[in-house]
Image (cartoon, rainbow, N blue to C red; front, side, top):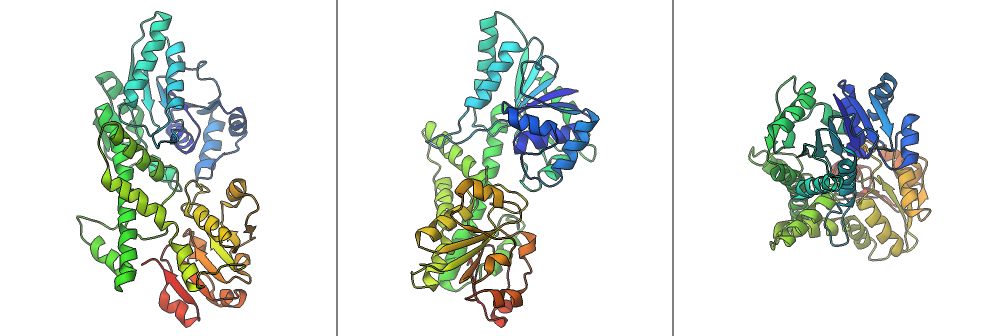
Length: 436
């Protein structure tokens, strides 16, 4: 089988690489010539564990190819996946211009049956627009070519995307014809040998499933952060509360960890887009609006804990940050809590020193030299008045408290992910603050 995937971001590159690993001939397409040139040389534009090895392996085997020209291969493939970006517009709605550009190109050049699959996260009704766009281009050409539009939302976690794709807990596909269903079944068959986890739906339902899933996970995070903030006020321990409610099988343990807010490319964007979709239908998503509000306020929590400790004066205080990416195992800083915290600290007159195992270059690209970039986790804490744990990278989990005690000017730890033990830190003479 031959397929094309348009867009070489997290979704497109991971999907294309994993399909090729299963023996499928894949061409990944991007309009960014520089990115494609680098990919042809084995230079990966994103950090994702395990991805580089698979790209190199399958490129060498000839199953994974890269191009900037969709028109040249559209009639050589059976399926075209659209995995381009859908950034939020100014009003919070998803910007579909790149998705519809792909549809236009397909319609202008296709001469045989194709399944065009939206892999990008798109609002309900987008596949209908894709269908109309392709058909409009065919009408302009005065030709009749059969095609189907399907929806195949992705559920990849950054930092574990390759494993998620190779061993999916479910594959959701929205189709409108038996022919498209058969083709998609054949495509995913190699991933289903240990058990059929494919869920076929109508197209609008598949589009909604993606937004509903991400919004539910975001809701659990904001709910738990709200509970954590209340726990502080009433004297309860949110870690104990989390264990207590997570033991209820109806609730479960996942995504109940309090912290300093969620970020990344998916949750913030998808929550905004679903709120906007509802508004366009004359409906208000009151719960999701609260989820969004709680999350934005939660990103400020660590800063205000520090402000309270120093009686509102952070001028010339040296504050160290461990972790910059929005989560471990990625260099992605989109909507990262660290950016909000750094901005607040700098405005308050603090000197900020940062360290992240992967995201230092990305941070410098985003904010330049506004902060001091440390060479390692301990270098970041030299003469520090406080240390903030923002991203729970593994190397931060068991630091040498003895070393930190010697390096830091003031022994203040603010734990934004609740990974440390308050009793341990008290024994070493640290003042410890956590979430909840």
